[in-house]
Length: 246
Image (cartoon, rainbow, N blue to C red; front, side, top):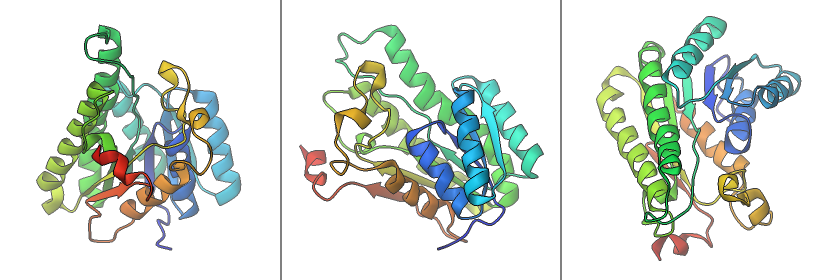
């Protein structure tokens, strides 16, 4: 297992699901992990688990990634606490269902501000530090960012943007030693979907779709490539791939 000994890592959307699992996967590999999300008490519980289970340094950075000040303060806190920044995992995101005709302004803005703006703000603040460390930015995309989503076109559009942005940033900063990767899971058993009612972790039975830990393993792989880039990882269950083509 490739290690990330003493790497300074920031994970957004870290209070549950993919973000929480990623924090564990990176701490297990030796990283010191900063956790960014809105739910401070949940972050504190996860941070204590990282310290106890892996003897890792863990930093709680509460805030809303929609606010550019959160990215600025969060990156500064990580650099101050850990002495630098080696890996950033841009995981925070939300999905709201609905037809374009019935989607409210608030629902539209929430997805744009979280999925698109939040990714931009975080990347803008992180890049100068990642250039110094020749580090890695891992962006959590979605299979919705590669295939049409007729039942959720606005969410899909945000993930198409995220994917295109990440690849273009990779081309811009690759010569400066920064790796930019995109990990695209299909449905994952997390709190995703709770904004519209039943979250995926309740909608799907264990083993029926991807688990957060599987996505975390892919993120850890992308974050720990010495001198190379895992440009894009598609993580679909073998029996789910056909669904993406319909």
